[in-house]
Image (cartoon, rainbow, N blue to C red):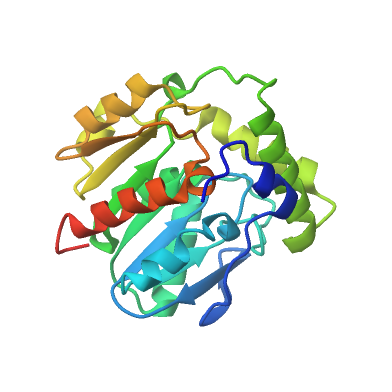
Length: 267
């Protein structure tokens, strides 16, 4: 299956399978939604900015079939989760993730982060490495130098943004607030994260930096810099894919995730 032009995603979205369990965790002024699938060692999937957990619909069945317990979390203010009036921050959303893990009795798990979800995963790896078995870090920067100037004429960006708007209206507790939501997330992304080389050198969990060959947001040299700066990190290029690889080419993306999870018995 492939959806390189995101026509299917734009028209139909990506629908989560029925979860084995779902609910909300009250934490620090917000209600954070989660769902759980399958049995076995846990793995937590963290979606990108403006999206929600449904964007991982093509990953969940494959991971469950691989005998993993899959946890998805809608980030604060995204999808089915609410927020308070405080500005967004990756550190705050990492603390929300810990609250969900505590609620589910998960002491430690590998994190698969896509875009903003990767920032959340790395923030937690810095804050509480004892809770993170490893980070699959896909399509994200850790300082402003890592981003490309956006080509606003790119139809993929328009299709993705349109789908995010529709999904927000369908799922959010504040369905009419998409524009303020986008503005608030954009303010966070303009200044966060901003890790220096010394910050990266202190990360002490297994990390794989994954870059799409045609990523619309992230400079490839930035991804290689991250792999060189985080102790023991590995690097993988997804040939032919873009920032939306989990939706466009799930087979390619899923193979990379499964390889990362099998690379160490700790994961």
